[in-house]
Length: 31
Image 1: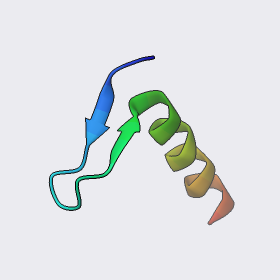
Image 2 (image 1 turned 30 degrees about the horizontal axis):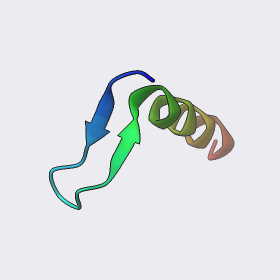
Image 3 (image 1 turned 45 degrees about the horizontal axis):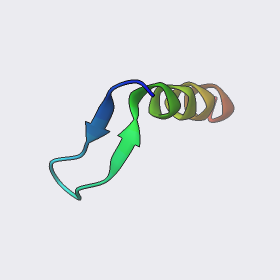
Image 4 (image 1 turned 120 degrees about the vertical axis):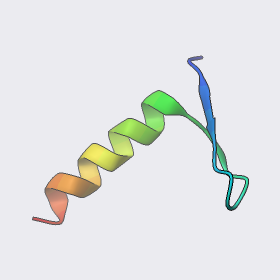
């Protein structure tokens, strides 16, 4: 597993690679 991102606001912890893939998906599906 890669490094983990922890949101300072809500405390959500998620693998950075998974988070990046979700962000890319959302960016291109909202166009």
